[in-house]
Image 1 (tube, one colour):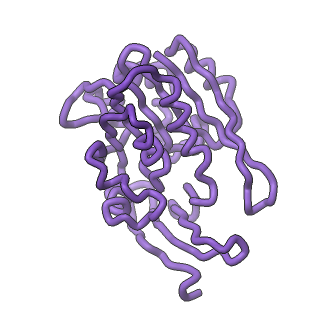
Image 2 (cartoon, one colour):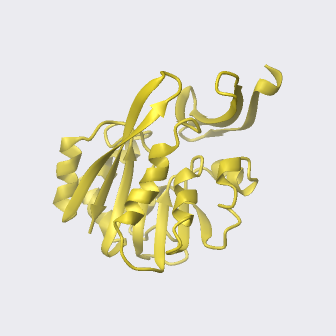
Length: 237
């Protein structure tokens, strides 16, 4: 395919082979960046709206300045990059399990995420987000037990469709209680999901957080010519 397709990075990981590729879409006349885990598409630069809204909706629920934010799952960088656009954010810890994904950003392979890695507020932590929460030390190895004003999570397809079975306990009341302990009072937990709002998961959130809401985020789908939607859950401690 020549210049119309390029595999920018590939690596075998404990959960499968992860790859970053760029392809030229002649119909749309743009470069499309995609991340795959084995044969499963994880994310595409064609559909960034909900990842952007994850940061916007999560941070909109907060008052005050000097916000410390944690992002679980780096991916193409839309959520983290959008968080930095909020001038109230003073620090951003990005927890990513795969070193290669962090390297994509350090090498600035993704033009729409430019500025994320060099920003002095950003620090990448190579760790399993779910194991870090379950282990009790928290999301910042330099400050065990550190609390954040917001934790924004985009790793699994949804609470029901996880990338690895070890993630499933996080989406239970006990798992979310451990997460809530890492939030300041009135702090926010926001979660991206590829599924429609899940009433059962809503009830799990309600067991842990005084307030929570499921936002349906619609966006144009250039592949189908129609509309698609994701869900962003926002819960406040």
